[in-house]
Image 1 (cartoon, rainbow, N blue to C red):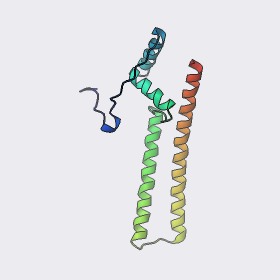
Image 2 (image 1 turned 120 degrees about the vertical axis):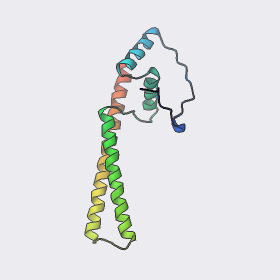
Image 3 (image 1 turned 180 degrees about the vertical axis):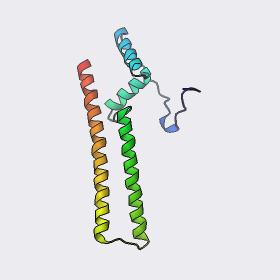
Image 4 (image 1 turned 30 degrees about the vertical axis):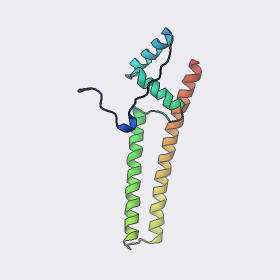
Length: 136
């Protein structure tokens, strides 16, 4: 990346250091894993800590694309909710059946997005757990 690494926001500023002792074999395995995934050893350890601590997985690749698609769908649902609210507040109330149908469609979209996110997280947790159990 030209110009170096982008600055972290204040929210993600990393100013705490943790010291970990590793055997030569453990360090070699960590470094090899990090290199093969185009990550720094620090990022590998951060991701493992976040996952193990219950913060959830870090998504990249196809999973990150899925998350971005999820965000787009949820934004669309939010826009639709705003339009419904604006229409109701201005006195332009659609018929009850139309209003109910629209809200039900939005509820299905949101529920589908929640299911997709929960599935992504569950699969990532399961993969991480299997890797940890296998390596211990």
